[in-house]
View 1 (spheres, rainbow, N blue to C red):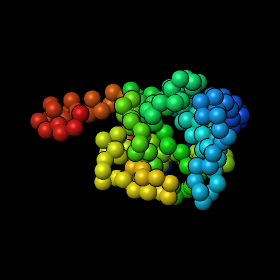
View 2 (cartoon, one colour):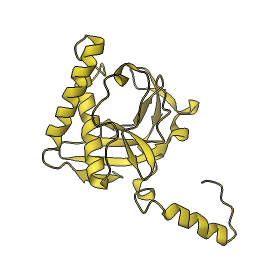
View 3 (cartoon, one colour):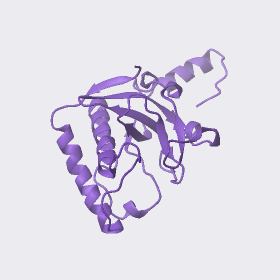
Length: 193
């Protein structure tokens, strides 16, 4: 399988659970209901779903030495239909989508607005590691041609083979500017900034 493989460090599971407990309690204040079921087939609770995502965020940020954007949830934003980014990586606001399925696809909900997100990334969470197959810029996935259905509701979907590998972004954040400047000096046309 392709992608960046990162080990889950000791204590990371516990920290993710603490953060999810806080979110779960805050969400109950607004909904008043118990934890619901996310998928009808796998009976994955919303709490387990949140735990996968938070665990993936913590592992990614630990590996790349970046700080999660909304690690402590703002209780007022829980009831708004807007998705904020999870962290900033090389100046890009990243929304990380996590799954436990090795062949899982990146799924982005169609009913939310993603004004504060620049790129979406996929994480495959295992028992001892997290694999990050790649990412897509917002304009590539928030697109009518990417709409599909995983059984719950329509979502923007991307196969792992459609994702851009992390090797293209995990280098020096200024390298792309030096590369573009080199192409301009050489007389090449720059089509993407």
